Length: 211
Image (cartoon, rainbow, N blue to C red; front, side, top):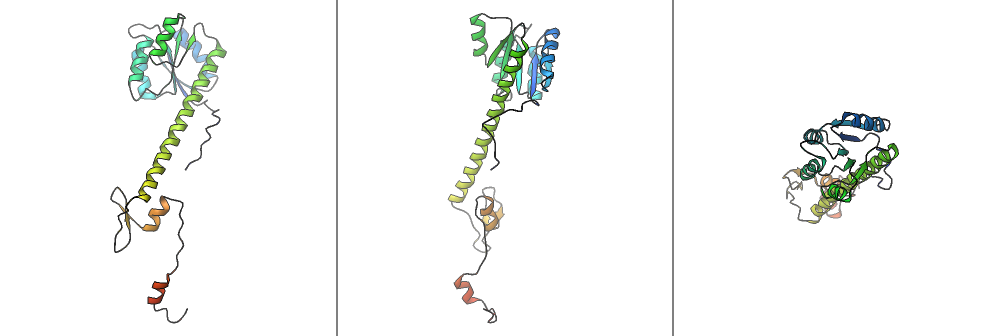
């Protein structure tokens, strides 16, 4: 099984970040902060555009403005969280609203955190990095779980009844394909094979008196 380091997740500089804001001046400020860190940035100027970009580009994080015309940030977030394709993407709200009710609404719609306007560079970069690291860690854990489940499936295969050809001794897998016994078992376990001749077979062989 491939080895992963889940203790420390440091390098997130190649992560993809989607910035959503209907005000291009706000976008420019955010881009100035983020591009210095090496993030791959995409932008959207409306909730509708954000839905399209998120589904197509699959960013690692979304910075989402709350106050936008037609579809505000809360509604955009709820739609993203209702789509299995975009549901895992963490969303940080960017808002001038600081009332408790607004903050609670942001969390209830699926946001993981919020950044207050006007922006403070240190706060933005620290929060973005933290949630990107969490996202990367979750991805790694999901991969480990998937690998573990595949390994368990292989163990179950070896523990169950194996269809074997009574003539050539090949084994049939669950997809119906036939494999040499040695390769089938080696691919699914840590077993290695060496070859010899058992006593019964040795007794039936004509080896010309060489043994």
